[in-house]
Length: 108
Image 1 (cartoon, rainbow, N blue to C red):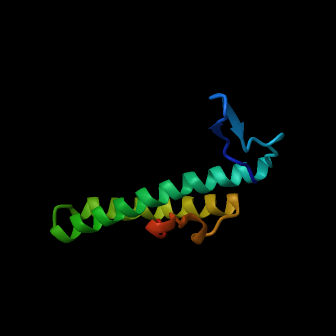
Image 2: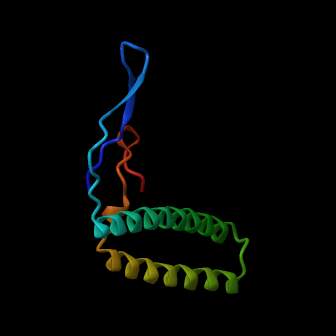
């Protein structure tokens, strides 16, 4: 999937003109589906990791009962199963979810 981001310039008469607008945008539905799946799964994975770290802190602090710890563990196991299934469904790997943010480095 390739597309250009149009931008405007001002000509000599002070009139805005568009530059870089392709005559046609060709979108492949499979690429759009996979890209959207990648974005959504990346956000879900990021939130999962944050929640997991918070859960570990609470367990280590002793602020959870044994039942709550068991329930959290089961929830994370089920979430991991669902994420694995969704990654397979979209043809993604764990590395695909680790988006490169340029100068900021990798997301995950």
